[in-house]
Image (cartoon, rainbow, N blue to C red; front, top):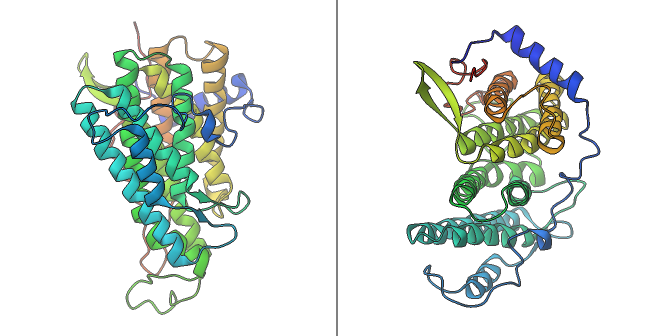
Length: 360
């Protein structure tokens, strides 16, 4: 059974985690920029043109992708319209990848589905060059992060067992759909017009103070929402809830090792997103908790430190509890012009279920 914790106890747990685990984040090599040629199960040149039951061979599919995506250089060129066009092409390519992978899954060819989805992500990531100092569309950032997650899953879940493949397929479908949503809701209507035109494209009706002046604070708030949604995405992809011993509890969805690995990486990514944001100070508690969580997970995952989580079942429960609590800490405010972004789309009722300990 699980016993509940109050908010103070949860905060104390995270503080203890930071103290015991130590901040070992800076030296980690897991968060270097992605190298597409190093994606473990995907070397673009590999494979033959053998048909795979999804409308053509891999080489044909890759050539078609490259032709439809083209090449966009956001460092030396790229008008607003050109960048919006790239986002549209990227979204279409990702949707095609999902459709192709779905056919392969229905044919019980999960390994090919994983390959298709990663192939698609690699090609989309390669089709645009951005300035590493100023960044680029969120679509590009999320594609790169998803490939890093995929590399980590290959490292932690070697081989092609049924459970490992199912975990990877489920994650990649969720990840690609998350990227498609970000392109639709952030990049095309918001990020690119604000970043490259420096004004609000869609002021609230009747709001004279919004007008056409670039509202940088509002711009930054949108990224806080996406940062929060990345934590929600991890929970959705790797956990589920169920009733056990009369209580609502959280369980790993697929291989528990995958959840702990991706939660480790996502904690670092989201902490950086919040720390680099204009509204970092109001979210300092969430940043601190994310860094503490990442630190303890690095120790648990890489160094087999069991001083805080004695076993995997305990770790899954406590990490899910921590992520749920941090989501509620992330602050997104509305302004006087009706811009409201307080809906994180967190549809998970974990507060009742989490925060306790498993007694085996």
